Image 1: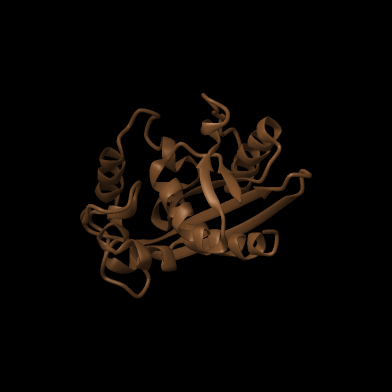
Image 2 (image 1 turned 30 degrees about the vertical axis):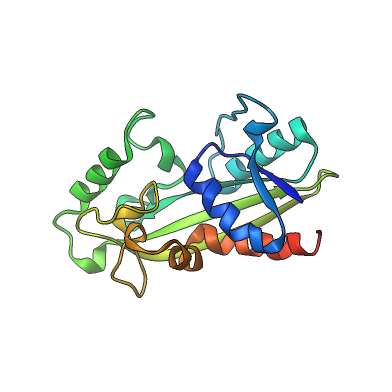
Length: 196
């Protein structure tokens, strides 16, 4: 069965395909069916943005659709970048610029003041318009420098709790097991396995 995902982020699409494949679902971007599909993320929470994207995709396609909104929350920065993670600093900023900004703000802080977490909310809308939500959180800390070449987004500066590697230094299977998105998508996959 096919699940359309409301995302243009190739890293997210790849992760979701890995996580949902075992449940018998083939993941494709909504843009494959609706060229140019895009939704302005006007919500103030991960929940609002996730559902906004999923509803918009369902209205255009009418099938099973999934969307997520996720981001990094750094405690010392008042949980910034948070819901604005993909637009932090300015819309055209690169992720390395965003990492450097965060690393600079935390540069003089000891390890016990570098707490952070990744959060993810996945919204799923079924063919009848029924809505389902799945949440995932991964606690950790901000590294002292960006490390690793895997993953995407803020992965090079985030060290999950209990580990020394950043997400960008981990094998994809380990990151999937620990990550905020992995947790939320696995819950969605369990639900979808009952629908297949």
